[in-house]
Length: 114
Image 1 (cartoon, one colour):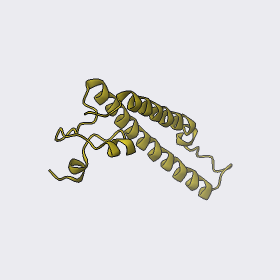
Image 2 (tube, one colour; image 1 turned 135 degrees about the horizontal axis):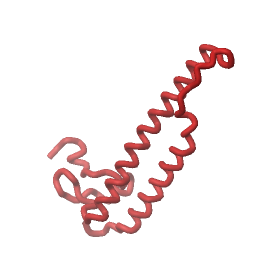
Image 3 (cartoon, rainbow, N blue to C red; image 1 turned 90 degrees about the horizontal axis):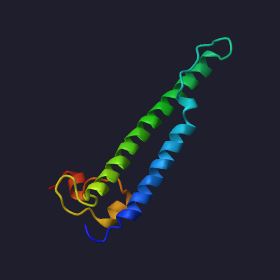
């Protein structure tokens, strides 16, 4: 694809990966198992702690998916396939890549149209 600055996208993706990994490290404590110590915490407080843990685990799962998308985009840059739709091979619009450099498909394929 002409007009794409792979170095700029590589830098942006690497920075995004660093942010996601840092967020993961910062929330590690929230994902740990909740202790079953009824003497220190009431039943409702424990339920709140379990709910917070569940939300933290889901956020971590989403960060994992985001890291996979970032790594896949970096691999496409390495292979010279960045900026081309993984489904149809057409160019992905520059605005779409500027908005989210991890997208693997053009807008038509993302919508399910051919």
